[in-house]
Image (tube, rainbow, N blue to C red):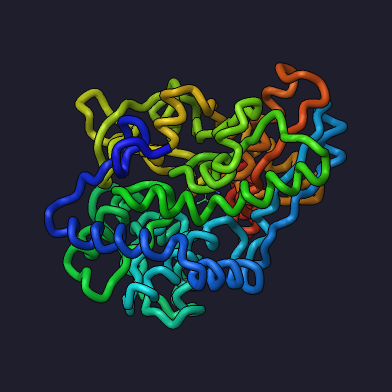
Length: 395
Ligand SMILES: *Cc1c(COP(=O)(O)O)cnc(C)c1O
């Protein structure tokens, strides 16, 4: 759906300093060359199958379906190696970097999930790996910092700005511009300057490629609705992509409302944000009255980003996808609900998508056929969820 090169409608583009332009162009060229290359595709899909464990299962959630009066299928990205969808993109980009002759990858990370996926891919493919992580996040996610180091990565602690994800992205972009010869910037979501949003979308589109065939096989028809959570938007765009042309299929993106969209403690970009330019792209961002990027908040570190990928801004603008905001409370409720109901502990990010079904079940026709992407597993969130309920499990 790209119109102008690198744009989705009026969103996207390449808003980068001169020093990065060469790197971006080199990447664009390499991707053009490899994306339809038979050997590249073979290698990528062999790794997805044998190493990541794809295709991921499509699971009919019987108890939840009965309880909510719908037919609900879960696309189990939580069963992937390293526990989430992020590995699909990390392996794809690491492989591309290797083909380009790069010896080193750098990546940003918020909660550490993308850092771990990147470090994993680097270990797998024999690349050096350095991760940029905000000081705040590194302290909150000490276990993931240890994992990255164990996997052979070097972790740089970022203290600028709010010392969180957006500052880690800025720092990684800066580092890339200083060392483009041997380094690829492995961005973790469908954001940033073109060609990143397209590359990440393509690597993650394996989710809807599989799910579309799986649900046709199971039900003999397309779903009425596809639901996914949206941080930067990579698991959502990957889940939507092969359904974009199916006009009967509603596409629902669930953003993090945090404490509520009428408070300042929120990350619901498309619900409360405005169009702007940041991190190399024109898209929607949470901004203050002066157009500065606003500090954002969500209980879910993976959704705690002040922007959203440009393709989502476009799908929002043409009303092809709908975006709803789910609060912390609703997400925690859904986290506990899925655990009890189906014996599946979802990532708190993914719980935002489950919460949508709980919140909106009454408004949907009975027996609607629903596909929900479970972007990751919830082991990483257990301590925080217990704390949310007033229980310190490490006491
Ligand atoms: C990082 C993460 C997300 C959010 O990222 P997207 O790019 O929006 O998909 C969602 N779920 C999980 C499990 C994550 O780790």
